[in-house]
Length: 306
Image (tube, rainbow, N blue to C red; front, side, top):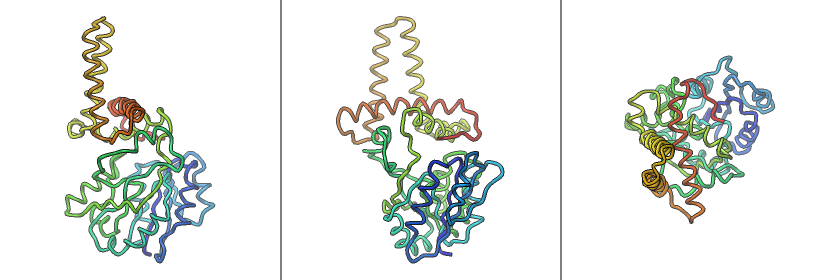
């Protein structure tokens, strides 16, 4: 078997059919492949939908981290190349071509490849403002569009099963630490249907993503995002106190400093395309920092991100 495509799924009845349809339609040309779905103890009809497709399904009786679900998929697989695709991701013909043309390199290299998710097929205003115009590239490959040889994956001992989130960052960090490469190949183009479509969804996703930064004091201090979100929280506390005590001049000075802080965050990350784009990104950064700080108070267990 050349390629094993592993799809972890928890309560993904909304997206799993589209995901599997695309994977079957755009299977890598010239390569033998299998699709393995790991139903992570879903409470909806995910498994019933998967049964309609010619793929392998393994249902877990108890929910585990997505890291462990992916590792279970590896244990059930036979492929020389492991392809991890999330259940809310839709692959494209470009992705399939890239997998076929890069197969030998992926097989022989000590590397992790893939690329960032693109917008969903019907992007919302939240996606367009938050995910477009980014000036910086991630230093890791998203776990839902990640490709690695079985040999390299075994050398890394797989994903860290204890990580609720940030498992992809950790895997890429360990790959580089062992002398391997992270290859961002934009030809592995996919759509991410799980992107938030409104402000509440955006808040929930960022709270979930922030959990990995708040496990210990060391992870907090090592995270630039958490430190910035803490500064954001301090600004808000000061503003509320100044407003409540009728300190007008202090309030406006602090508000100006806070506005500058958010503006610097926006222009540091994005190539801003006009005033409306700037305002939209400013609003989302306010929610982003607030949600990431709120992660500190969330129970460190399984938190639904959608």
